[in-house]
Length: 315
Image 1 (spheres, rainbow, N blue to C red):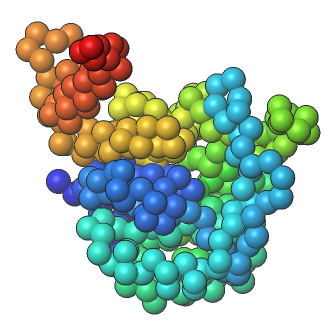
Image 2 (image 1 turned 45 degrees about the horizontal axis):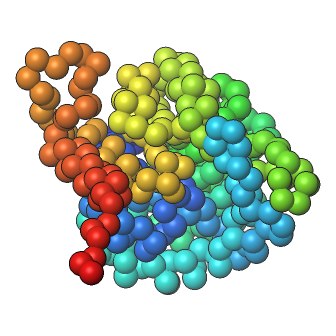
C-alpha cells in the first residue's frame, strides 16, 4: 500500500515504506547498495549537496561521545551538476524515489538548485536543509524560492531548535513536508588532539528531543511531518509515527548496523506482519517476521562459530 508523505497534489510523493535514510547517511546510493536492499526503503535521501563545490572541513572529522558521536565534515561535494551527472544512471535504475538534499546556503543558489532538480527526471523530490540560526523570514524566503522553481515536492528539514514560527513560515511558503529535525550542533573535545571541535551530534539521546517536537508540531500544523533523530530500532521508528509523523528518516545506526535500516523499513512497510502465538503486547518485535528471524539466526551462527574452539590436528 502506497503512503503519501507530502501534501496532496499532482506532484505529491508516494512511497511503499515510510522509512528512508537521513541526509548524509548513505551517500548517493552507491556506497550501501551491496549492504542494504535499497528497494525495501521508501526513498533514498542523498548526502547534502550545494550549488557550487564545497571543500571538506579541515582537522578532526569525528569525535566519539559517551552516547553517540560528533561529526564535522564541512559537507564536501562537487556541486549539484556534477553530482547528478555522476549518479544519474544509478538513480534511474533504482525502484524507489530519489530525494536530493540541498543545503540552503544562499537564496539564489537554492532557486538555481530547484530549477536544476525540476529538469532532472531521475530525481523525484528535493529536500531543503535550512541553516540553524535563521529567522522565520529567512525560512520563508528559502522555501518560497525553492517551491517557485520546481513542480516537484520540496521537503524542508528544520533545525532541531527551530521555533514554531519558523515551521509555520516554511509550511505557509509551500513546503510539501517538514523533516523534524536536523541533528543538533554541539562542541566536544577531541581526545587525540585535545582541541574543541564543533559539529552535529548523532546518538540515541537525540530521539527524545526530536520526538517531543514532532508531537508538538503535528498538533499545530497540517503539513505532513517526517520524524528524524536517534532512531536505532523498529520501536523507535514506531514512536515517531505514534507522535504524529507520517514517515521517518534513520541516521547514525546505519553506520554501525547497515541492515537495521532495512529491517526498520521492512517492519514499517508492512513486510513484517506476524507475531508469535501468545506473545504479549511488548513482545511484538522479538520473534516477529521472516526478516528478523533470519537476522537472529545468522547472529546466533556467528556467535557459535566464534565460541567453538579450533579442532586439534592429528599428530
